[in-house]
Image (tube, rainbow, N blue to C red):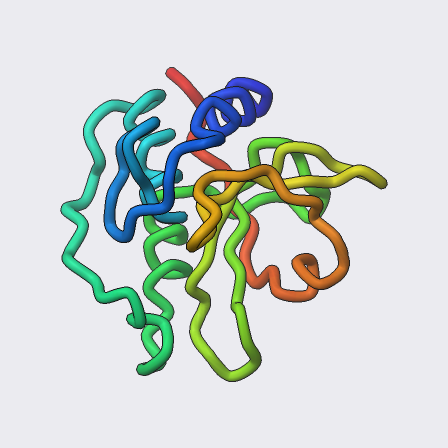
Length: 143
């Protein structure tokens, strides 16, 4: 399952960044990437996604990404695996507002994510990114 998730995420590479979108090849944001992978493997999204502004994570204290992941995904074991859903807090004191899919582990660790002004890319999971991880989850098993 984990390699299937990674392959699915990598298939989105090159998709432009479009706020609130979730269409491979046309546009997506970081949440839209996770939503698209969900639809590919599990069918319709289990919750309706409310509209959100581009600056939604700059104010408030409601951990929406962590809450949603806790409802729909499984907490990951401490050992990282390809296919894990990573949730990031982009700055201290702010809510978590970025997510991606771990693609590789070990010394060459990487993750696939939709990044504003870059689109969907695979980035090294280097120390600056690692220090921002506040959640690690897994998709449910395939039936």
